[in-house]
Length: 292
Ligand SMILES: Nc1nc2c(ncn2[C@@H]2O[C@H](COP(=O)(O)OP(=O)(O)OP(=O)(O)O)[C@@H](O)[C@H]2O)c(=O)[nH]1
Ligand SMILES: [Mg+2]
Image (cartoon, rainbow, N blue to C red; front, top):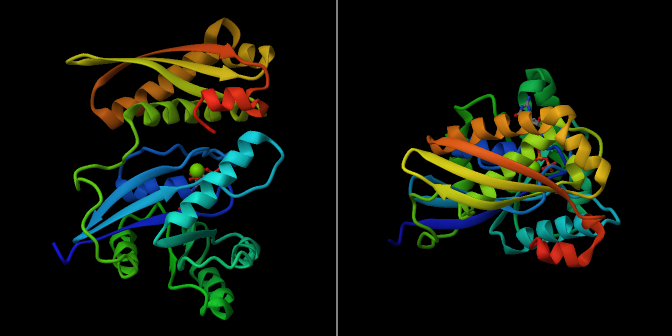
């Protein structure tokens, strides 16, 4: 018992840095939604990863950005809460980006120790990687460790976890080691549907969409999922449904396949589309949807 280590690791970084991808990569399972579009993640999600006798609880956070929308303020709060509760912060800095977002992060003078992960290293050459590492050199008294990663390289995972476990305190496991996330399956299903919305619909519609799982019927061989996507405007509803239902159909197929892969079950999905005027700015609606 005394050898067990367990701790919370907050995964932080600007929108699109690769935070949700890192969680999925660590788990070998897709539980967090990933998108080419920035600001995909809204709520904190977590991944429980066992390595030797260490239990890591990685907390995915929405990318830090400031905006007037009430929903975005909630997203910022979620990130701050996760950082405050963590034993270690993982700051993700894409290898292709400048160090500006890291400097901004340092200016916050947080007390929690942090490690820097250089993400998307497959996108640069070895020489560029060496240059990037030397750019971080002047900051080395600030971070515990600096590790290059890429979700394309599976082998880097155990090296990363070996490095990180040094910073996790001795503590009995917080959760059953069999668990991969404390999130409810329903929340994970909703995230898969949200990812499909990001995939097939552009402009502001994905950012105005909220997915709620209304009902799940678990059968022996078939699981039936009933969901509603709420948007902010009537015309967004039409875009989401598409001509003759073509868009919502694609969203249904995409999310059904992802959920089937995750659960190893046959899935049936029925998605309805609804609209609630300006819900991202409406306090009452945000409370009802569980954001506030
Ligand atoms: N080539 C490459 N692409 C990556 C890697 N990690 C993430 N990506 C891509 O980067 C994009 C953003 O990834 P996400 O994981 O959604 O980023 P995020 O930091 O969670 O973004 P927000 O939730 O919007 O804050 C996606 O298109 C990913 O496929 C990587 O190691 N290599
Ligand atoms: Mg994300």
